[in-house]
Image 1 (tube, one colour):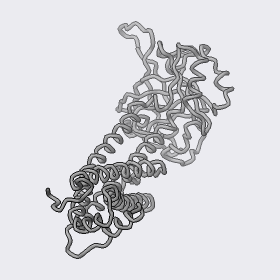
Image 2 (cartoon, one colour):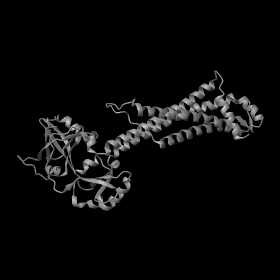
Image 3 (cartoon, rainbow, N blue to C red):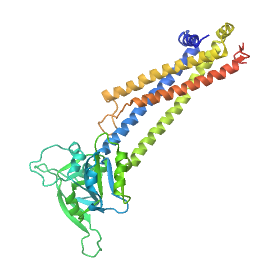
Image 4 (cartoon, rainbow, N blue to C red):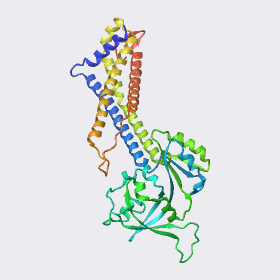
Length: 413
């Protein structure tokens, strides 16, 4: 008897249901369990893909692809780095010199701690600053220099706009370096800045950053040629790790080059860890739900004992019985996986098109990102687990039910 006959019998056993039969109910529960578990995997993996994409989007503009900092010191002299080498690399789109320091900002009676970040004008294009301004209204007079404040700082300082489209002026207090504290001596450099606009990137930037031109920041901090870092924007499609190694080799061991992921390592690792943990929990739940599949195969084996007795008398061997019920388990699995994929991706497409679920505290839809490779992984994992359960169950039943190639009369012997 060929495997084709075993498959035809398996299909008949599965789909030729009788009314008020317990095996029908258990088989339906098996299919439902596999479908729900598969759909849950699809939805949650797509949701975590969306969260990772959202995190990368939040940090991708202000935190450039690569950043160079000194290993030993907080700042370094500009001439210590070969900037011409960086600018001539074909993978590099642009770069900006950066200087930053913690300061205190004051507006009227409001005081807050902040971080001054001085940048070249090229940084405004690198960071797509125009997409992150909280207002696009044109000012009535041209600002002599850009001065952008984080949206969170704007709120904390209670800064208001005037009729010309500018916000209030603020005082910036920067600590003097190498200063011996004496009575009556001011330990701060103090300058006044006219806010041009407010920026909205991510919580960290919004709550901390005052963005100034590099020379203005140097003047405020008492720097001459010092830099805190060099940020590098790469062209699209460039492998950041490869160009990182190339630049690192050129600048030597006194400096370190980090990618955006490495700079925000904790955030990205936390997101990936949460994704892995949730997937492992779902796999465990899926394994528990697969016990319904074992029950379906076992009860069907018991119910079809009389039919198997006749078929073994006609030449059905132990090998064919194993194939028959293995096909039954595989068909149950395939149906469950198919319905699970349709349900899971159906829910994902509804979220993408209708934005049913919103992010807590915002009006933005919960992010969903669909990847073909995820579907391949999910289908491979689910099919592997269900087929393994089917095969092991059928082998165990066949070993107990066959003696010297003959089927026992009593299933429970």
